[in-house]
Image: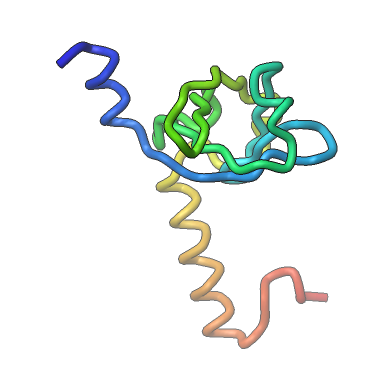
Length: 107
């Protein structure tokens, strides 16, 4: 097995829809874009990424597993890793259970 194939096996995969307006994709609150994925606006693509480094570039593939290209993180406003995203969701759910309302409902 080649090094590149081994690296691909270690990456997480998620299917996302390319934004119709700007050709970007979103993953865990972060936004990614490249000229390679922009023509796929409105279509579903498969992203492969390192779940511990969500602010790094992602690899984009068609649903038929054809490589399209790399998309850079252009808005690192979400979580840096999937563990942090899970922990946030868990804390938010616990808050709702205890208070009976969503955190943004506080006034």
